[in-house]
Length: 159
Image: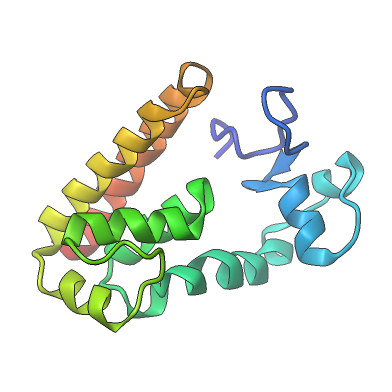
């Protein structure tokens, strides 16, 4: 989506360099073990980044083991705020120990909660996190739009 600020930007508000397809230059350089100048970042394709997203975000939040809808919401927040933070917010919502790792106990508690309720509470937790950030004034509208869009998509997968 061209409206998405994750699509090729280098706005000078952060310290992560340019971004393309939601991937920052720092993250891409760490993943590939090579520098990621803007020329490299501009050439990234969805096929290039899929393995990185799966390993660093989807697998890190146990996406294959979460209920449909919950999986994309937690993985998306993992991309945006880090997998450990995404896991801790999920654990807070389901009242599990907040250790940042989604294991059998957290999964059990996730499956014991009604999915639409869990998704609503998780979206509220995401919003609270975004509003707590110093950069909310700069990026907040986009973060909240993203949160709303993910919630809508996630709910369509469970209802």
